[in-house]
Length: 81
Image 1 (spheres, rainbow, N blue to C red):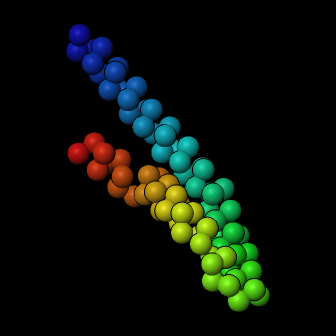
Image 2 (cartoon, helix red, strand yellow):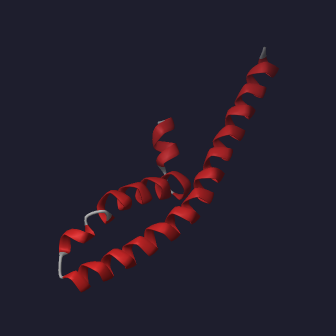
């Protein structure tokens, strides 16, 4: 029974490590997209003189912040707590 608990704990730790690794890999691609979108939307807002063009940056920044916190921050420790 003790060995089974140890194996289950090991599997849980490996699964969490895989999730963190996936999140970090996703963050590379999403960060590139977010940076490019921010530059393009800012340029569009300046050219059109319309600040409403910047609105999509807000939800994208929330997604980026969440993914960053999951991959490099303390989100998993807060969830465990």
